[in-house]
Length: 329
Image (tube, rainbow, N blue to C red; front, side, top):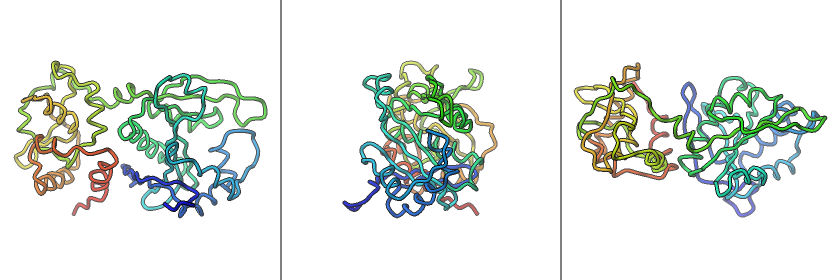
């Protein structure tokens, strides 16, 4: 990054998406032409900016101020969908003192986002890439609380936060002349995020297997994900452990998920681990490729995987990027 750069970039890239490949890249000055375009469109700004119901368009100087925040306070990302830049999003340290006062001593962040390419509105992409940013906030940054805003006129935004597990913290009336009449505040705590990502399986489906009999389908473990598991993991109580989903593949029993909690159990000295047979239809060609990668890198069991715990931002590149780029023939 040049010392005279307008946008103070970072080094985190996030990968995800199901029906589409979505990449969140560090926003930098090379992307300014896109930002000028999107921020000059009154229809785009109507949905991304609060305030009076007026037709607005931001000039280059205003754009520079908007995206000129210090790197230690805000991370700006360019949103790419299937290789096309469609918008931007931010992970920002909370900058409203009244909100910080609600969570004394906590790391509180907010998310702002814009889909500047209107052809991509209404396709569920905002939910997908904001969910990626939430994952990074909790796994990569160790955030305590996400606290975000939406006004009542922006129904899609309100539904997005609720869909992603946020609950309405409070609401207050806006002054006359605003686009909306009520501003809603939505919050997602680390505890709620953790609980939403746990696995609930009936006792009848659970049984135990030797950890040494399970073949991983993953090349590394996110330190942030492992930390999240360790926050609820009780090595003395297997009944509260979320069992590992398994399938048979070419004579092996493979793990199709749950690698972080399997490593947590191994590190606590467990010899056996709760599992269940996963009956969901999965793309077993992809899992066969995963196992081939593991064989090539000498990952034949959980003991091998436990030697490959990496920071979450490295996990994004080493594992999620590789999976996105997987080509099946």
